[in-house]
Length: 426
Image: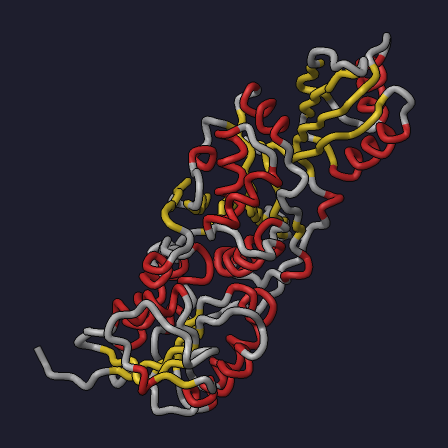
């Protein structure tokens, strides 16, 4: 084999993923990590044989070095965006795992990279160790993909799985997840659905070949899901998951969102538990495929980062225009559908006073708002003479269900709307 020159790598960030990348590439025959930016240069690190002479606490040392590829693993929009742009200006190719940056500034970033004839690869930004970007760009390139349903956040999937298996409340499981290190001290980015929304923004842009604007992605987290909802969902043949979904309709409009969903136990996604992730795609001619695996963690995510590094390094010096298939070529912005105009099935839990005519009232409010009921159940009486009523609707408009909810909240015989969760439209 030819004795080719090692490709030089600069790393920004040596946290969980950065450590996995360093440990895996340390003895590589093809690449050499020449500079690593860290926040605190004196922090003890659990990395055997780390060459501390290549560490710096100034990330601009990395982007101004003679690295061929800069790998950004710090997350957030700034300073990451300015660092990446500076690196591109300096002639570097980019590998990033930064889902927030891609969702909010992807268009600007990819245009800037193209102007400077540089490649930005981001396999690790969507589903950790699950390969999804390169398959869509290469093997599945001949498909018209029109539907995505995915579990893209391990923290929320862990919490929902534990609530389901232990019958515990959201608050109890969150505390446990934080103690185990599965959830951040401030878990907002995960539990309010931001992380999954960043990922589905980029994934749907890629799959639909139209730009999806992050600000138009509907987002709802898991903080309102109750242990009682889990129990009832199970009895009705469902699991509750935080689903990131994207639909490209026949009229070319896109419906992209993240929210909890009752998923049929017959569906693949209902069996994706704990910190695992999964992406289901529907397309023509491939049909329906699901890829699943570890969505986070040191080595699974490092696996995706390293795949990108090696894809670029194999091309350097061989062509003036690297990896044309992997470059961004979306110039049209998708028209998005407002959540109020979408049609869904719904699970509703209502707490009502136990008296004659309550079920009739529920049925009447639904009927008045063009909502057809598929199933209605009343649970046993509580000590305060109230009962929980569960309603599953047929397909109806979000606008209509919200009108019905506000009427339930004003009704004399309904004490509380406990929950409103959308149901997978299988």
